[in-house]
Image (cartoon, rainbow, N blue to C red; front, side):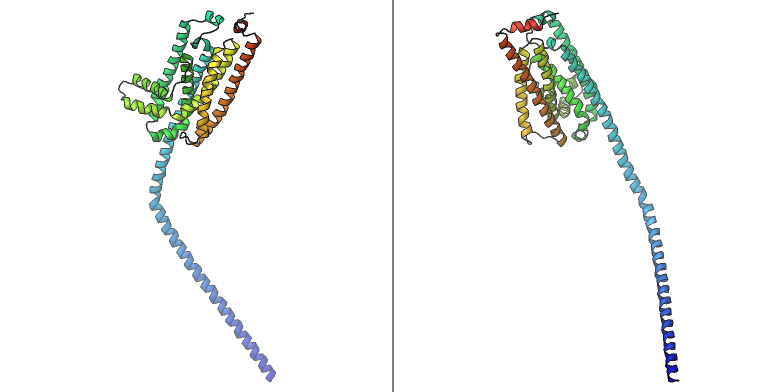
Length: 330
């Protein structure tokens, strides 16, 4: 009986413990449900408040982003127009350069070989130069003055759109410098190029104040574009020198050799000293590339002059023999 009573007591005690655990489990579940319900209510309240806040602030953000969109669209349209004008300037400038190359002997004021003197005249030379100058004047009037100068009216807009107009201005400066070299055998300075554009502005619109025309010309013809245009000019001079040497003219290659040597020496200073002139990263990169091309062109001119000298020595210092051979008509 004693044993049975103990067993019954343990069983009853175990039963009460199980009941206690069951009640504790039920209470934890009910607490979780209450906390879950409270969290859900809190999240719903936060979502409702957030929706109200977003609804109140959405028009402000929409208005702000619409303004940003309009500004970016306007700038993209201006950039597209400037890129198109720059391409047209590049195309027309190349046409002027090609025309001068086809008639470089007529354009040069140096004395030509006898056979060339019989074929050319001062009237033809004047007509060729006037045609090239008229073409450059139209480029300045139609594109630089009437379009680019009006789109780029401040320093801020110039620096914003400079990458779009720089290629065309470089090509225009190359054509202008090449034309003036054929006329006077010298390279125009940066101030002379700006003065040329300024005069075209004043001739086209007499009401333009001289100070404004000067500021616009300085803004359009920057020092960086001028240097890059001079770098392109050496390539055209190299072609002229090689062409002249094949036609029996030995004065032109020597003249061009001295000019290109001086230009290369000046470029060496700018490329070695980063503080010599203020250039952007891509402009300095273009300058380094054109400097390497310039050195290659100078090497070709030096080789041409070297071969001319060797041939003159082989002909027993009789240049007229080579000149007559070059003018020989089959």
